[in-house]
Image 1: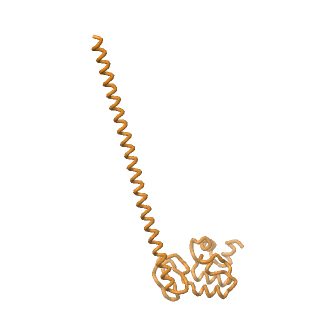
Image 2: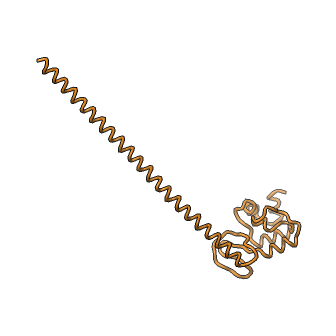
Image 3: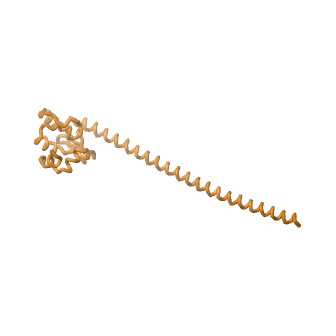
Length: 173
């Protein structure tokens, strides 16, 4: 069965199904329920990227797992009837609200660490660029200095040649 045929059978847009499969997005709880109604042997944890196993023939276990699932949506955490504000990707967070908060806290910490690391890399990048520019300026200065010294040597060489020439002229008289 092709992805398009599977999507049609589920009444889901094919690009959405592709995004689920590629981990670009996660299905909503209502979408997972819809899939389980049509294919009860599908492991709901597979659908949210928390299991490598797609098929679980224990249908009762699949529905029990589905009922215990909580989702962190784009703007809210859904845990039963409670709504908590947040801005996280859709994930399976376990059986209770405490575990959900622990997961969110872990995500926040990881996110902050990643942002700090990005800031560090940006500072390192700026320092590296400054160092490179400094070296370029040093090279330009060295080039200018060498050219000036060459001109001075050439001028001194000309003066010396003139002196020698004048000395020979005086010597010949």
